[in-house]
Image (cartoon, rainbow over all chains, first blue to last red; front, side):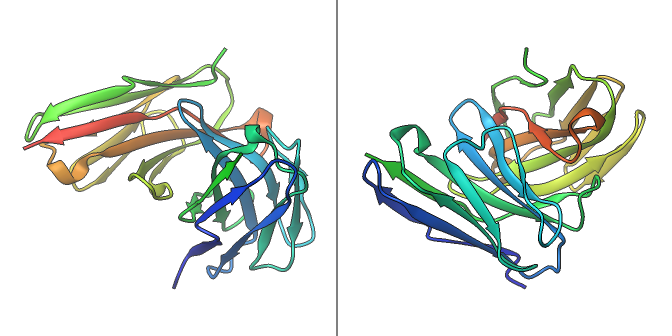
Length: 113
Length: 111
């Protein structure tokens, strides 16, 4: 099992460009999440999908959109990148949206210049 | 006010020198508390889940405990390979299924 996979691993964008971060899990989990991690601030939830067909905002959703493509895949889109979106992005999944543990992917390091 | 606070921010230990990391939270209504380990350039790796005060979990040299307002991650006789950032995350009833993370403790173990 690969667990949670993310592509790309690294990306550099210019301000105003758009891109989509891809995430897939092979654990048959129902819930999936997108986080960003910035130095000294801990992980912050951007969006989550409790189950296939549903999405909801987290703590820092502005500037992002998500799509739960199917049970396995959950993508994060930046429509018009800004320097403030420079961060490391992690996708995670959990069995369901109760208090079950979340499993994380390896991350995407994004720089916006 | 921070809802989840970890201390210390950084900790340096000699190999074999036992110590504890702290995670305290200010919001009531705990659904679960999670400990993760994160190595540089990698995603967080799940370690433990604790659900109620008095609960304890162990894995190799690590032991996690939970009281009503805080959790401790005890590291017994650490080795250099235990060096990592340790993250605490809390699931509160007030916030549904949204995990609230602390900023982490950076642990360095020297041989």
